[in-house]
Image (cartoon, rainbow, N blue to C red; front, side):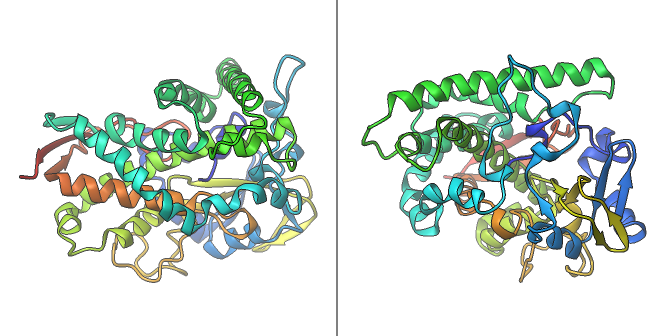
Length: 405
């Protein structure tokens, strides 16, 4: 579960990919930039853009020269007033050893063994969603499967009622929203909605954490409420981060998988097992990464691919470009579900490697396996795709299906 950078501040995508077409397919721009200016300063956005696989990984692993602490960014959009909640300290906005402290108390719960133990419950959740679709020949995959499934899963892990999932979706959408244009009024509107969503989430989780102090439940909120490692503010930040990162990125992984399979005519081959669906999931992560970029701040002067980056400069790392770098991947613009090895950076790398990577993979495995087993035919309509605001995914994905007998 990686958290998108747009969740911690209002930002616009680069001008070259602001159109609908650019948001759906930024890959030609990535290729051009990777080839001509792999480390480039965008004066309008006041950030260095980094595109090559080697450079992206270097920055992610160089914790001496680059920090994840976004409070060091000189950006008015990240400021707060007395009525606003301050920027919450979480594992994705801190460096070691602070990062290790914020992550360590829960790390064990996201290891492969713990995730395997939780899989039967996830399978049951998916079965219930598919049962609801039993009589529907047409449905929106995003609304009916990709959104509710990971929200229910993360809600159950946290120990909060799944019936709140519509509220969770509204909060998540607000926190990752991007302005529709670059006017000051629009930027302020989006910023205010983000701050309001964060305040509401903060109050909600603060109440639950207080109620579960000295509780003996096995849910993650009870675990957070009773750890001495975290302050109350850090506990709230943990809950918000897990809810946000635990649903929106998996939603887009599932949607991008069906999109990619349909586009390449591979759905039947994956259903029959001619193509290994776990390898196909890894290729989706590379080919259409749910998180296309991450940000870091330089904390010292450093040279990167011939460019001089100064302390305090913002650096945008384009994971989506790194995952299509021909220096690392053979025929990177082709979707090859059999690709092995697949050294994608969809989950990041270094100490900030995604906490929920094993959970996301398991959710995708369960969802796609059950979906393709349940329906002998599943055709997605790719005729009018609309990109999400702030993330790499789709607003909707109409599907026509017939149930297996």
